[in-house]
Length: 100
Image (cartoon, rainbow, N blue to C red; front, side, top):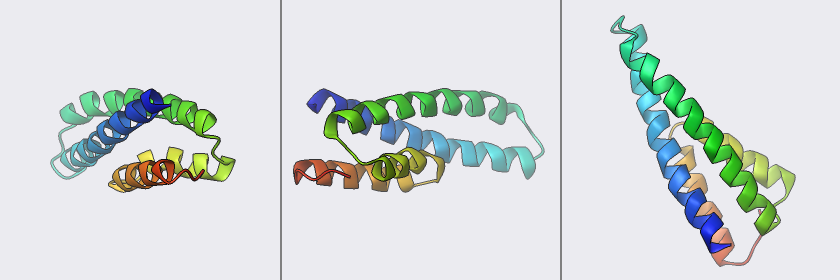
């Protein structure tokens, strides 16, 4: 299960940073009236979020998380900064031997 945790942690950080870049790209698009950055960051973030979903479900199945806990961690990648918080809580609960 350590491999699944490592993959999840990596993708949680990547998706968190990608989401912050997406927010910046949206600001540039709507405030600066320039959609160039959004054309690149949007699809990349979408792909990375899909990978995050797959790796999170993989970890959830291996760690026997509840459906509610799994859904909350999956949604963490959609709110800026929350994926960082979720990653810390997931790792802490796994080290404590608790399921989400």
